[in-house]
Amino acid sequence: MTASQQGKLFFSFLRIGLLGFGGGPSMIPLVHQEVVKRHAWMKDEEFADVLAIANTLPGPIATKMPGYIGFRVGGTVGCINAVLAVILPMIVAMILLLGLFSRHRDVAWIHGMSQGMVPVVMVMMGQLAWDFLNKSRLALGWAVSLVMAAVAGVLIYWLGVHPGLVIGALLVAAMLPPLTKRKSVEEAAQ
Image (cartoon, rainbow, N blue to C red; front, side):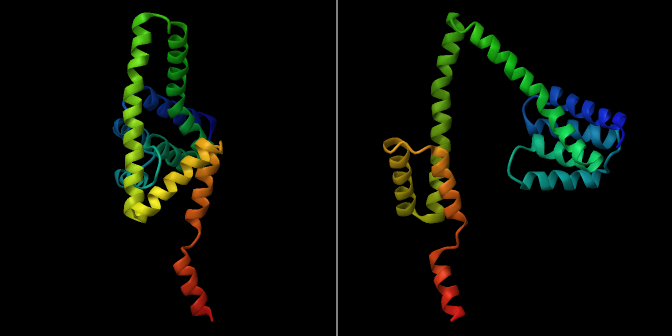
């Protein structure tokens, strides 16, 4: 892919990043407009397939679709190009807003606004924790879920183990086959 085509790819996804206010789902029509209608990099059926696959994979659709489309249109450089173009406006906006906030944080209404966000974030984190506990309960049962939560709490809060290490250990443990299956596999091998 030539430099001018990479430029078209970059500016197409930059436009999407600038105008796609509201997150990934609001960007989908903009991506369709740029990719299918304006540049004809894909047909409608291909775009529908990309959208379906992007919806099934974990992570934000706002980076999955540009990553795949960029790779398909311009290879690895196109993938990096498209993802950077989409996230660049948000990065710049966050830096500017955080700079503005830190400069004026002593203004009474801004201080009040930041204090007002604390309960909202607490409720969101509580909801997220409850969702995780409920999913764990459904998969493992109450007893195992509560024991795991208690052990994680002891490791993190009383023993000072970094949460990333606890999460990493749980991920490794989750990848191991269950003991009951291991025993049945070993018995079948004998």
